[in-house]
Image 1: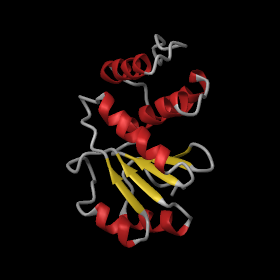
Image 2: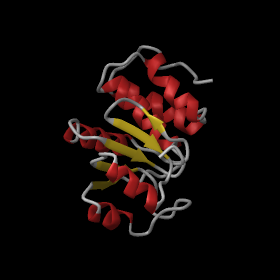
Image 3: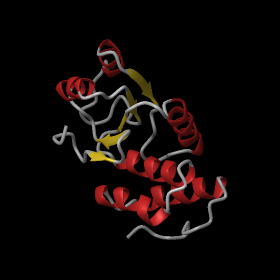
Length: 157
């Protein structure tokens, strides 16, 4: 799985990465992954056209929340938050095309739902990329919505 683009093990239950190949999905199933959450669009680079069907055939649960790269929305995050709550006892891979969307969503999830210190949560995100203006604005919007004020004005650079 280390060959998945920008693959990260966030904690014993959550991993993140870019678009896995079909063989990597098989490997994930073999290593105990139970849920795949895909935040990429079906038109994203290297997308597997029938990913949901393939993941389901492997015995895993598949959730697709297509997040438009230039227009992430609070609703997207809220849907993701709900999925993470439903699957809180399962081993989950969250992926998108390059793990950039996912790293922001997991940063927010860890701060909002898990109560993790924002500076610690930011480390995994920053190991993947430096959020651009659109994504920094999205992060601030979501933190504002959940009334998280600690470090919300921080620019992640």
